[in-house]
Amino acid sequence: MSKVYAFVVACLMLASTAWGQFSSAQQTDDVAEQRERIEAARQQKTMELDAKAAACWSKFAVTDCQNQVKTQRRAMLADFRRQEIRLNDQERQQRAAQQVQRNRERAAEWAERQTGNRSLTEANADSPDQRQERLNEKAMNHQQRAKAVAPVVPVSKAPSGPDAQAVVRNRDAYAEKLRAAEQRRQERERRLLEKANSSVPLPATPP
Image 1 (cartoon, one colour):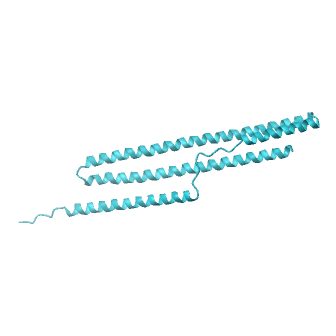
Image 2 (tube, rainbow, N blue to C red; image 1 turned 135 degrees about the horizontal axis):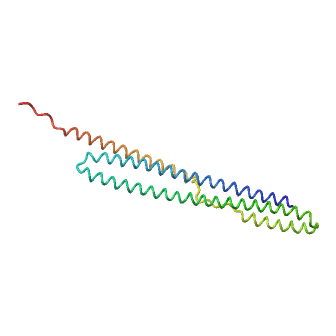
Image 3 (cartoon, rainbow, N blue to C red; image 1 turned 30 degrees about the vertical axis):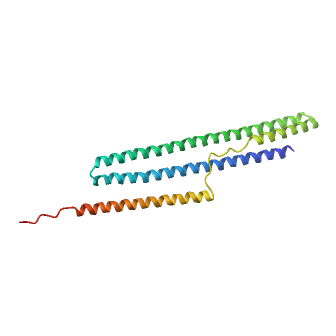
């Protein structure tokens, strides 16, 4: 009977470890994906602001236009910084949860080794009735420890199924909006250039 209970506890420990590793991998992938989205959005927004700053030179109030672009750039950088701080906090929470899981696994392994050592000593010293009584007591202890070693609830899970499809659709729609905005910006600059060229005065006719 002791071998059966030891096998059950070992299976529970392996399942708990596998679940913790799977959850940790999901959380790490989720944070990495969010960082990639933030960096891509930051680069795109920076390009847009650079284009606005360049367009300021074609306007009459160049200084006012550039000041507006600088204000927008500061707000953009502050917003992305807040998002990165939130991700850093999430990573710290994940690392703390992983450390708790590792501590639980080590405690369960240590308790299992101690129980095995006591079993050998008691088996050599006790009578058959006493050994059976101790085996029953150990079985109850194993069950209680198995309940205590529960998988850590993941902080966040990567989207799957319809949610993942919605994320892809939203991402594609956002990319399409960015492309359309870039096309409109290029068209606007082309019209401004054509207007500037058409306004150049013709050379004076000699008398």
